[in-house]
Image (cartoon, rainbow over all chains, first blue to last red; front, top):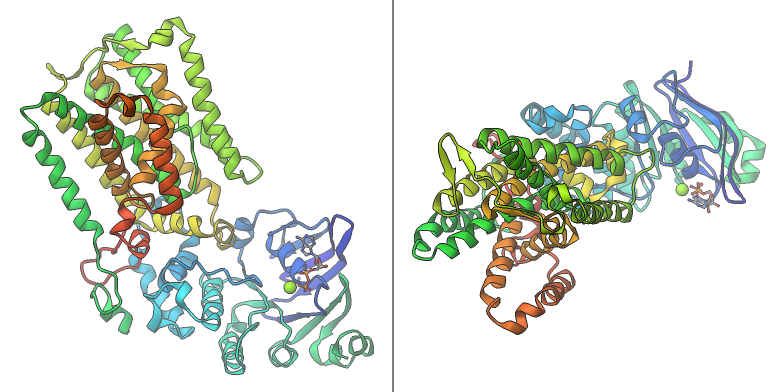
Length: 242
Length: 347
Ligand SMILES: Nc1ncnc2c1ncn2[C@@H]1O[C@H](COP(=O)(O)OP(=O)(O)O)[C@@H](O)[C@H]1O
Ligand SMILES: [Mg+2]
């Protein structure tokens, strides 16, 4: 069974049909790319999966649970994690505290009030910062990081609790080519533990890391399958790849 | 790991830590106050009042400064427990410190939990306006209700409240009561300081900055807010009990929007986002009010003056008096574990 199963999902904003009968499956350990022109509904779909808003129709199943209308914190507890299109690190907290905050999210309130895991979490926070090349900036405010570094911090935070599925909306937007390459390198090793659903404009980046592609256009899936096959699809070339 | 080596060292660009200095200055001033003022009993009474109202201000600060809950009804959780212990004194002739202070806290906690459940834990995420109006309405309704209820003294309130007792000892106004209030304030302060600097406090800091983002990490944001709101109600209850024992009087105004607004003013004037700010704000406002009360014009327009002061603070110095000396960075503080000393820095 697929880790994530989006079935017949629609989303309307007033008269606008942003999503229309979308079917999409993400398999365990798969890197799944979601592409399509601007305004085709990619972010809207990611938000429906994450719970930022609810689908108007259809259903979403994650790790065997129907989560169509579950609140975001429940989805997170079942192993879903995300980075939205707009960067949302907590700018007035240190880089270290941002990661700690993400890492300790599963703890009971009482254990947090006693700071029961502060010490035990320390090596994990530092390891995560080192992995994302931020260890030297642990005590700086997150708001002082460069745009690229903030994106990495967000990915570090999203991965802090070893999620089963990571949703990324345009993680390399605004990055230099070097930063993009670094981002690809940073994401590659998570494949063993975590599936990825990623929206990205940079097609070379997507082709490099994704094994599966889904193409959206005007809220509908126009093609879906192994990356190579979708790339060769006539309709996709017409609609999107040009 | 250079980050660890650097930890705690006040290197270049690292903000100096002024908050502990301010805390120690305030502490010393408090302990010295009754001795310095010993010739002027009315000033000891004023100082005691300030300590008690500081506890109320801290309870508001937990809600607003730490959790972003704008409550305009904090006096409700101050006044209702105060009435309860006044009635317990009158009708049951009981006023033992180990019974009534915890009772007042329990009443405050219960009442604020009910409000928290209603205002914060509904199906939909509440808007700040909903919470502000909900708490304001509660406070206003309670004041009106009590004003018309003969059993609790109606508009006259309850006076000649039975003195607070510890064994055979009775607390009257003066140095002993001052130190009782001081002890309560210190306990509340230390407890709140511990909580706000814990990992729980980190969650609150995150909630203040981006509530929605925290939900996606897996936090039940509204539950955290409800817990803080309930604790704040418990603390306000303690302040209310001390207040009524100290004044020997409690009236409908002590649970209404008037006192609720004073809590807002104390906190914003002193500096939201720290625990010492509200204490400083309460002291400044109450001391000013005492000094200026002799001037007739000032006395008549005091509420207007307070309103203007609040407006000026919000417009030009949103971080309050304390913001003049303590940086935002230090107010928010750091929550990382430190290898040596083990204490987190900042506040
Ligand atoms: N909250 C909203 N309210 C109204 N319309 C929206 C909202 N969010 C997205 N849309 C519309 O839905 C369509 C899909 O948007 P989006 O999912 O952001 O596209 P993209 O594929 O570029 O991420 C667009 O026409 C957008 O204007
Ligand atoms: Mg988008």
